[in-house]
Image (cartoon, rainbow, N blue to C red; front, side, top):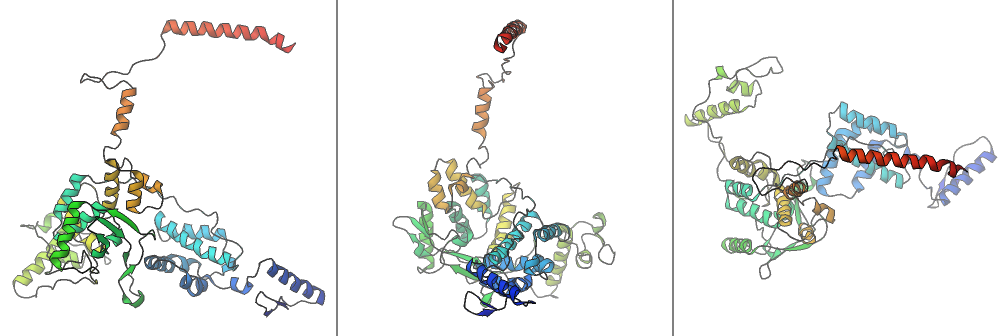
Length: 471
């Protein structure tokens, strides 16, 4: 027997003689004195038990991060490694698990990287708590994640998106976003008290997050955090024309200092699908893919939509026309407008899948833009206009200047100056409209002969100097 770090009697094991027993309890107390106070029994518990009972309930993370972790742990981690003991998990098991995510679950590299982050966090805590004495994630690599280039919208493209929005509140929302570069949670949590209209300064001190899990705590969908993403308040100045619009909105609606400045618009009527004047003949559209029973149906029919599970535009239009005809005949009552579960905050998914998607379609852009792209455009426009890099960093709330530097030369045409410099060096820029040919700097025949004679002379001098050097 020996005493642990809390003075409790613990067993060091059972032995055949007193000499072995004395060595055992002495070694146990030496390990405790050296800081090795972990209980071996804790290392023999299953990974699933440790994660669900000890690690996850006490791990301090944001509410939205907890939702993502819960999904990934239950879907990818515990089904494969949950039955293993903590001490039995080795780096080879980690590599096999990552390979399984690729082959069995067909998980993409960004999700695999996120799963590995969770795995490393679990075993870092277990290692620090001396539950395990080996970190099975150390040195194990995940598939590479390609870093894509950002495509920034131009001012003309933004104007087309802005005009495509259907509501004055949403237009003001997008204009405030492009003028301030706020994150979505910071933008939708703005209140009149955050703006000092005398100085034009906006204080970013809060952010709202939207929870989507069915078992979210208390059933609350929107949670207001008393700090932005970087956990540091910041101030930025707004343009005068935007301040006038915000001031006019506050006075028109009679908003109090603690009211939401940009509240969720009211949905008054159900949105109907816009049908073409003439639907195509189903006989000309071909057949759907076979369903689970191997049956195929004609495209552009309600049967293909229902039994064939086809969601192409032709089948969707056919169902919409069928329902419209029943409503017109009085057989079906018009569907009531769908309500959005919100406390006044504008849900990001509702805005992205509804008004924003329709505005992009009206703008007819040849690439996709997310609402977060307004923040990217704000930074790129400022830097392209000559704004100071540190000022832009502070406006956006970036933690490091290197993050802000990513927006340099991000606008279309940002490399034009570099190409002009390259063309000037190569002699391709001339006053005449026609481009000049590159100036050749290759030596002619006489120059080559002189160079060869010089090399021969140097070679003879080296041969003559070798015996003297050896002596």
